[in-house]
Length: 279
Image (cartoon, rainbow, N blue to C red; front, side, top):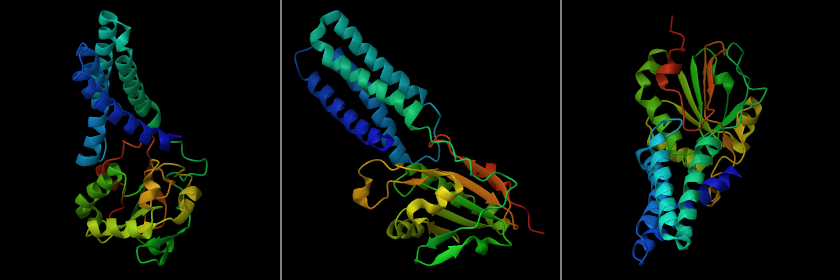
């Protein structure tokens, strides 16, 4: 349901903005369409910013967006109260935009809890096999004797995920200082994995988890995480929950964080300090 929500909500916002602009050209009190326009344009501006600025994280609740959208709905409501029920469609549009935004913040952004089998600090990382960008298998045995950071991301389509990768790339000196291995893992296709690997000239591995099998094994799978429609671009519907795992040379998990909110990701300074210094 969530994957359909975000796609339909974005289309609704675009339609409401067009309707609001059209209403401003009609002989009706301008405050009604203007209020609806504001209620819709505030959330859509947030999503445009998310896609273009590509921040690694946001506030849990972007309050300014809620305030502006709520203000727009109130302006439309006051117009209906003052000028009559003929303006009800603008109020309905403003309320729909605001309700959708609040649902996005309180419901859509929340991620399912990790499974009961999800690893915890102090446990050994379970063994599993992934596929590299060239199609070859690689096992966790390759990490033996090294610190490692495993970053599970949703796919190239997620601006927060690519920003999180870029943020870790910017902190590469800290990674190299500990002689750590870094694996970026997603369930996306080999084509998309190669594309993102080319974006970053890093001595890291971009790996595939076909069918999300490893994510399921670790209890961090997120069925239906990709917004509806991305299948047309070759992305799978299922992904992993955004997760960072740090292990030591013995394969013991020293840090793990599974995102409870897909817009909240740990800063590299938070988890790189768990890398064990080289002797």
